[in-house]
Amino acid sequence: MINDNGAFRLTGARALIMAASSHESTARAILYAFLANFGIALSKSWAAWLTGSGSMLAEAIHSYADAGNQVLLYLGLRQSTRAPDKKHPLGYGKLSYFWSFIVALLLFSVGGLFSMYEGFHKLSAPEPLNQIWVALLVLGVAIVLEGFSTFGCVREINVLRGERPFRDWLRHTRNSALVVVLGEDIAALLGLILAFAFLSLASITGDPVYDAIGSMCIGVVLIVVSVFLSIRVRSLLVGQSADPEIQEAIDAVIAETDDVVEVFNTITMQFGPDTMLATKIRLRDGLSMHSGVAAINALERRLKDEIPALKWCFVEPDVTDR
Image (cartoon, rainbow, N blue to C red; front, side, top):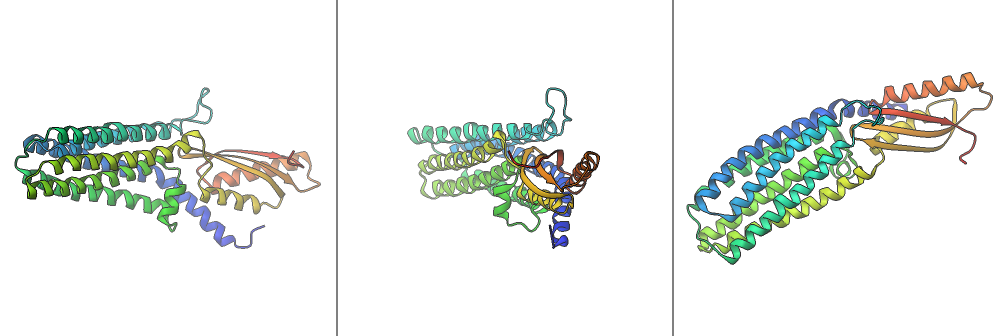
């Protein structure tokens, strides 16, 4: 079965921590991003109006879109915890994936495409810029604020990933809202840095074309990030297995069960914060029907106790995988 019980206990404890803190960590990350983006959007709007900068206008629209996106992500987070009902027996967990996908589309359209349009518009009809120092000051403050928001998001991710490498967590996590917040924060930070750089060039050279190029570069960044997020969330919408850590914990619990002599197959499915398990096993010979049922019930109870994220557990006894 399993020789290193300590290793499994660590995995089980880790699963408990993940289940208890995932919702709170995601909600905090969304709040950090909303407050930063809304405050930055207001200051960018003022600076764009005062200077006539296309890069600043693109950045202002981007920040307003991001603030609205945080509202949608929080809505998805709340809706995903609704209890199952007759029409949705497996709950509403996938609503968090739906809203995350919508946010990725908005980032592509409202953010990326508008920035590209504004850049081409300014490139075809350049206009002189006024008081560029105001825009640079606003962008500098915005970079600091967005940096704090990104730091807050990464800190919440670190709470959840524990000792797992960051890249491994990003590849395998089923927390779509946190991935989207991270993507938005990184895109916003890169956009601000690009806007600052190209506005500085426009100020030094006196050529407003650099401002238009900056707007188009911001659009490219937003489109690339939105495509990445869409691909990442798509697999969750279609239906993806549970996090590898949860699957390892499930395998360990079953392997420790004396009455189970063989596991034919195990299927997991992620529904937002909740996990479903269906497994086919062979019990040891000689068990009566009553004893077999008791063994299966005990296994299901232990699985749910050790892995709080496991909401549905279906165990099928059999003698062959046919």
